[in-house]
Image (cartoon, rainbow, N blue to C red; front, side, top):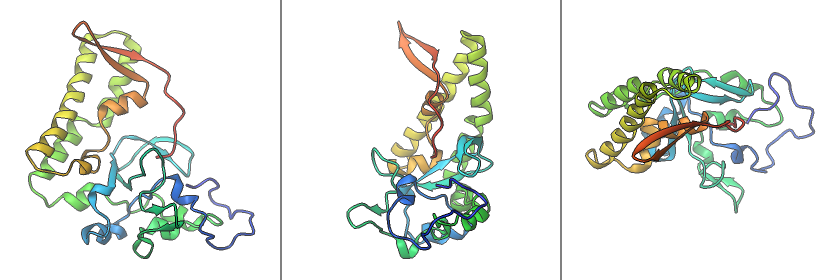
Length: 236
């Protein structure tokens, strides 16, 4: 993760000491140069997740949440931690070091200028990887359109402003239900590994709404929306 952009850090460290700090702050984002790593099976799709276009994402350079300008495909973290799944805690080493993504090669904690130069350039998208797969890509495009973050974020703002508007809440519930249904359908009917779903469709709309301060619960057969204050944004 990048903390001090544009300037070389004042430190005596001039090389990697294998402390694992960078690997414990989340996996890297992929760029077009990384496409062969996935196509060759060095890194499997089940090890990836997608931050979808328009989704609020933590910008490491600017230090705040911003809508993603495009897909951001990243390596998943280990359970109950942000540590990259390819980092071996016991040996303090990367399991795919010799075939690691370009961000890992560019990241030098003692001098972040190289990774700053590539940070948001030539990012790999789901279309780059899945665009030629008829049927599945059509589902991904349909999901992206129906569950567009522009629509979701607008609904959140309107629901919060209106307090209780059944029509707005009905629209939100439709999006949530469609999002969950298409995931279930792809797993059951398409025989797709469930671990690939976060890569194909990103995180669920339900989880997104929770992160934005919207809670949904059922009472007397009805869905109720309540607003809470979301926690401080964290790097993804």
